[in-house]
Structure formats: C-alpha cells, structure tokens
Image (cartoon, rainbow, N blue to C red; front, side, top):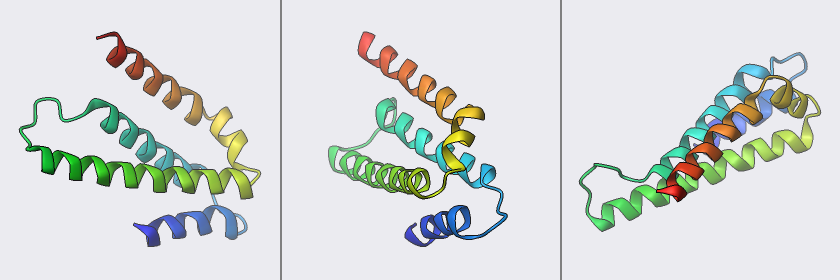
Length: 107
C-alpha cells in the first residue's frame, strides 16, 4: 500500500506534464469509499467481534493513508485544489458522505 501511495504522490507532484486528474480521482474515490465503509459498518454480515475489530482497524488505517496522500497533494501541488473543486471531486463526494452521516444519525 505504501509503495502505491508514494508512487501516486510522485506522479502527481514530481513529474512535469503529468495528468493530475485521473490519479487524483482514483485517490479520492478510494478515500470516500473507505469512509462510507467505515460509516456503514458490517450491516448484514456475520462476523465475530474480533474479525469486525480487525476489519475496522484495517479500513481506518487505509483511510488515514489515503487522507495523508490527498493532504500531501494539496500541500505540494497547486494544481490539485482547483481540480478537486472544479471537477466536483471534493464537493460531490463530500456531500455524499455527509448525506450518509445524516441518514445514519437520524436512524
């Protein structure tokens, strides 16, 4: 995982002329999918508490790593923030996650 994330960071920040949209879109899709999975829980899946704890721990670690990657991209590459806002990557995905949070907290 670390090698893939470091490669993604390098491609987005270190290589002149790279297309920042595709890798950034993938990174944000994966990050928000992990967030949804953490919020959703094990709905309908039969797991013992030890298995469930391990799955949550792994998902949380993955989400933290993806978040750190996106943070680094925002910090070091001036192309990233406008792409996230103009392309709707941040706004649409954030709205989806917040809608899901509202559904979970209302029920």
